[in-house]
Length: 131
Image (tube, rainbow, N blue to C red):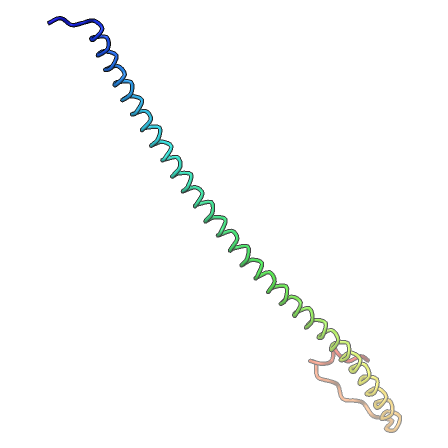
């Protein structure tokens, strides 16, 4: 039996096309697998970024809430300081008036009783009494 060169060329070409098609299919499969891996990696990174952004937003909301609470506390403390300053001013005025009244009484007592010497105040309050 003789082989016709046309048949051999056709058979060789068919085998070559099959080999090329197989190689192309293998390369395509590898490329598809690589694209799929890249897509999965991108999805994983997207989820990680989304998770990080959610954590940042939650922390921002928490910080904003605490900041507002602290501002309210600071304003409350400022109000208390203003109230205390007002009370201190009123007490200073009352102490000053009381001191003047005591000096008037002592002056009167000294004028009525010539040898009168007022008692010395205790050491704890001596620094608060004006001569």
